Length: 257
Image (cartoon, rainbow, N blue to C red; front, side, top):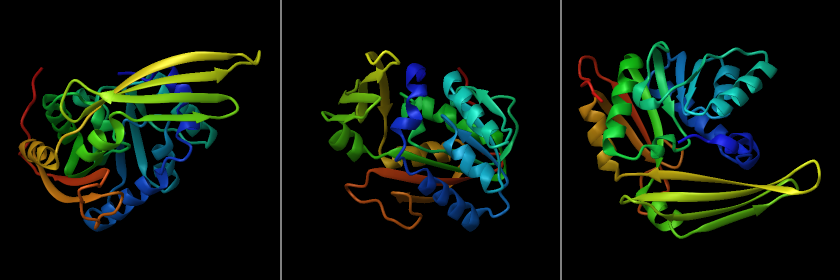
């Protein structure tokens, strides 16, 4: 899945996204579990919002994304700040030749774009290979409650001066999966509107599925919590689940295509 035209609208549409909360979760986590963390891989970095937070706070980030358009925007944003950050167009399931890292973050439900358990396992194995000794893996996912009860069947819409959108969510092909059908109307220089469409598919799993795949792919689970807080318990209606895991030496299994 690539973001295509959506990349150029992303920052405007995500203006209210809680990137500061994601960064604070990351910062509090490494202070608790690995204060020496310096090098950080941002998986699914998009247009670079977290990369900016990381580099502005003294970390040495690298970004990967499937979308070359997203990476172009991220690079422009960083260069405007006088920062140069390595950026790679790669699939999280097959990361290769991009260095090694003290921590890997997969925020903004990026992991939910993987469609199968095999994809999840391949991504975890890929992360394991790139982490330094006892490196940390931090990620968040939509809860099954959010997919099943909040997204499926819902319609979201917003109208602004230069852009409007209609976002409809339908039940996907798998259990706990959803298809987001997005239609954008973008005002041109002539005053007319151009119409663009995107289809985004997401899938999640019960918490124990992620726990199992972390263990099977060489990780020790350190913490599970809800809604950006290390100490917030997961409740029936929690919408976003956060995981913190540590690489165990000599435990990873190879995932072959």
